[in-house]
Image 1 (cartoon, rainbow, N blue to C red):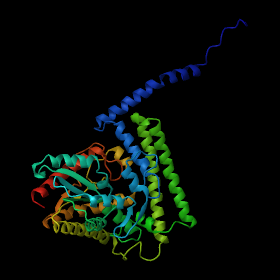
Image 2: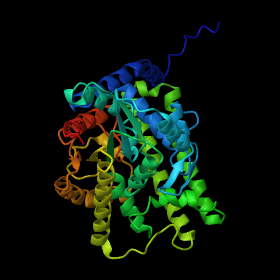
Image 3: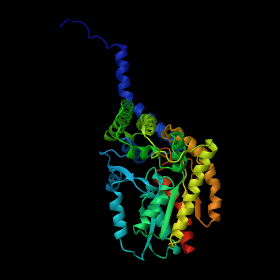
Image 4: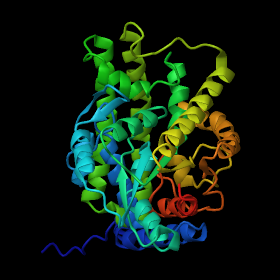
Length: 431
């Protein structure tokens, strides 16, 4: 032994050890404080909803067009829908599950104990199942006007569908023998957003969404510039997928603080992917020859563009109503709410961040929705059961949207509760 006293630990080391010892305490304080702030704001943190949001986002960040990730836990019908997009001769594009679904619908024998509701529209209508359709069924079945029948939904809505795709799809389904009691058409956002973006891309606003339609009917990209865009798109998508999978695997969504950081990084990846996807869609249209992708030439400026979108939407509603009325089918047309429609909802910070950065969606909604709303009374005068649900979230300050137009389970239930009285009124009228 040297006889020398042991050296004292340097002050910085003691401070570091103390900081490490207190780290769990500070983390707990931060977590508690953040949750308290969220609750005071009327938006308490829900780990299950946050996890579901990340799962949906990861599922969407995969292919050139929106398809769920193979590792995401999804029901079989959803997987089948996104397996393969292909061109469809009557309404633009479809998925490989469509023939099987329709065959099942046409083989099913009519049952007087059932009230069959055919749901058409875009992704908001498609995502009504299960939360929205379950709530709608509860409300309809509980009312005497339903006459004790069991409500059964056939949700044939398709992401990115816009009018007149729903008109063509309805006619096609009826031609094949599908016989609903009620047709519920939910639209508005896609007409505004994709009609707006179509014009920018040099495509007639009445044509299907140029991005998906151009993808399914164009040849595979062969020039270097287009391939570079695909590589950039996949890199942006993969960054988001890695972030989302890591958060789900490590259980980070149980923490409100960590979930906030995860979603912020995920939203950045989504915004970048959306921007590059837009460039890719534009590139496909530039490479296309002839008018097979762009339709009749369109000109006239912004006012003419909006007028064309609104006319398309109105005429489609009149056509669907006439098709249904001639067959004794009740028809209900709903104008859906959307996040970018000015004044339609007090937006939360989470909703604003999750919306992404797509000027076509933003400007299309803000500029077209007032005209869609203004067209509602004229549809009612023509005998159409039209519901303007664009302001259905106006008194709801809590977070409902998880992206630019889609809302979760709570929003779906609110939406269904607005739709039910209109459906019941049509049933009581004998239509």
